[in-house]
Image (cartoon, rainbow, N blue to C red; front, side):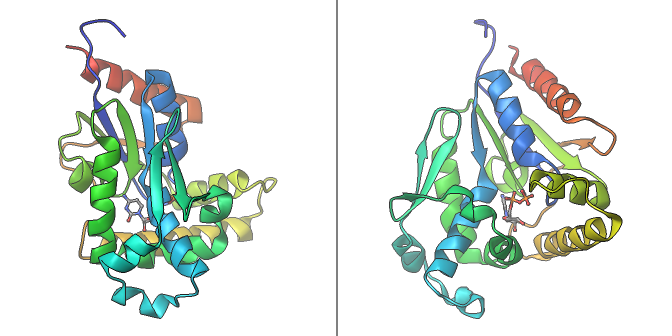
Length: 230
Ligand code: CDP
């Protein structure tokens, strides 16, 4: 990076399985920035509540003190942030089917969002960041220098998510079932009262349906390099 450039914040938002996290991670690597996966924070809160045996019907009674007691911590790591619960790395358990099914319910709760907003902003202090989620460009980092809203056809998102989960080329029925789960999660995320999923007015919309992964990463990294120029 030359002297004419500054560290900026890149916000990537979009619906479920639109490729935000993997794209954000690759864009961050190409810029030498840190990646902040905000969905992982919502997933960690959901996993902590499930592990403690708190039934989802009781989650709307969770207070900031209850959330604090979950002992969720985010430490800057080489290329991103290491999340732990009670001192233990969260690992892949935050991507389980049960967390997938319950996370949007948890993420709709105002005390949970308020609590994580502080944690996410603290993690992002100082710039040089690519953050992805649902409300990054609208609420978490409204001053981000570059905002991207990724969109993609539900069936293509479903196909990619199933492949990411290690399935071989999924059949049409599997794709349809996964697409309907993704659309249902989007419906909850778009209709909640606090910080719903929506594109920021100044976001660049990128439809990734016809793009390869490398093409979408390159498109965003190029825009980011332009915005980082003096
Ligand atoms: O990777 P995928 O798109 O499946 O989901 P994610 O980015 O890991 O986010 C999981 C869930 O967390 C979303 O469905 C939202 O309910 C919630 N979330 C949110 O409300 N706000 C964010 N900034 C990020 C995630």
